[in-house]
Image (cartoon, rainbow, N blue to C red):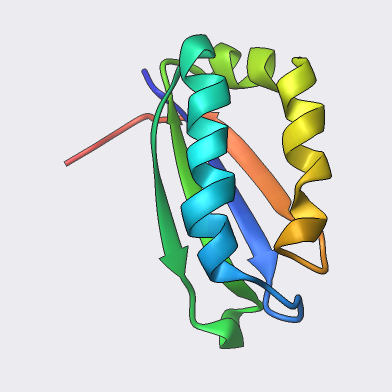
Length: 100
């Protein structure tokens, strides 16, 4: 089944949503589509839950995500975080076990 990575940015962070949507995430897809990233969804969250932005990344499988994390591109993408967020993300990942 598909691998899913969910990335949350804290509500307390100063966040440039325009940069994230129009520059960072298209770059993520460009760099990682070759190792199994197929698409992503970005959600602006209710900050009362502690997070303001959520990105869900869909992978061929969870090993594709793990492989992507070990690439030079991962370092480059993480180095871009200060360009849109004053705080780093929380990253959770796993394998899809159901869908409707």
